[in-house]
Image 1 (cartoon, rainbow, N blue to C red):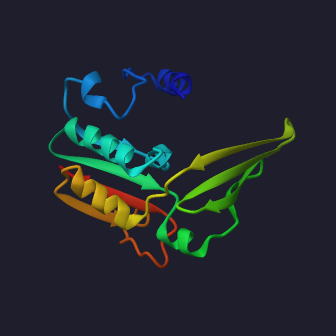
Image 2: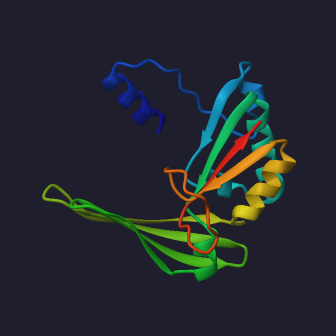
Image 3: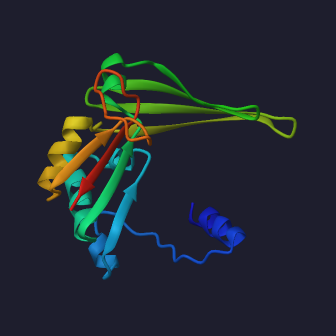
Length: 178
């Protein structure tokens, strides 16, 4: 990912330092404080339990300036968790399709991912899995963000800032203010 980011930045003529660090110990790696921290695509779900997730959120809180914001996204929403669909088509373009085949395992889930390449240049597929031992939903995020020291938390269902609805939202976006 860092190599691709460097390539993309170079193509745009932009120089931004990139680092690979454990997000549980951000203050040990950065002396400066930031206006915002962004954590996308269910990254918090890779933590094996809430204790580790809390460590991550506290680390992010600590590297923010006063009134800084943390933006978290999770594709696993309350709506999905309650409906428990087995198949979710995630991407479908002329050249590429991605399908999630989900096994719900107690408080966790295994996402079996099928990538299908169907272009004139490439016809192939790749299959892989990601295990989330403890899925965090809206109320879990709120509880952990509060425990991490965030003073105001807002939840959205999309990037248009429409309010999150546990019964309908397919995406969970949390914006937490220090």
